Length: 230
Image 1: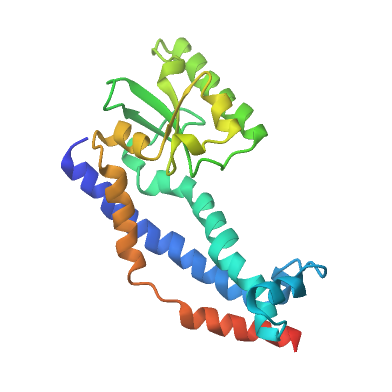
Image 2: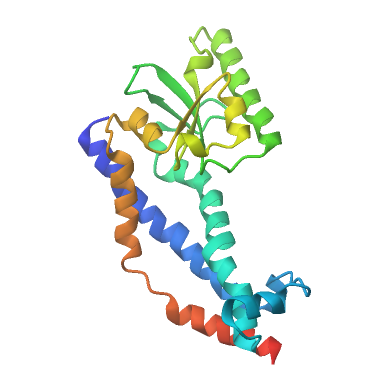
């Protein structure tokens, strides 16, 4: 992959992050004005408000519900969901024609062609996903034999957008017994041949984040949500 192609990925990634991740996060935050967006545990709700904020006033009760969703569940769900679109919009030049594969690329480390399924993070698949992923790999291998294309286990990989190998879930480790699992920095190194590309990608997202300030929106949502507890 040449420097121009790498720069194109970085620019497309920034655009994607702003248009898809950030905008979705904002829209999902607006929805939290509605109390019906939450499943409230009546045994712990007041307790958490007292524990964290020292009182159970309406605003504290609202914050107990709101902050975990905005800072955790909402953005994590959005990020994971958008990964499938990321492959098409940002890595479309590497799109795969093999059913079940997200991208194809020539591995910059070993020079072999790789058929890759992209995933968001080191904990983002469940036990059932293991069979789905391995079934797709086996289909690709059979397809290769039918069309006289050399595809083996070594050509089938899982590429994980971020994280480190020590953080891989047991489900990923089970896949790694038969297929390569590239995670975070190592995935982007195999894809681009640039050991620092992962850091450049993170930096490009940080540039977008510097322009973000949704504190006014969060306060508006908090005030609306607080009304349910008055």
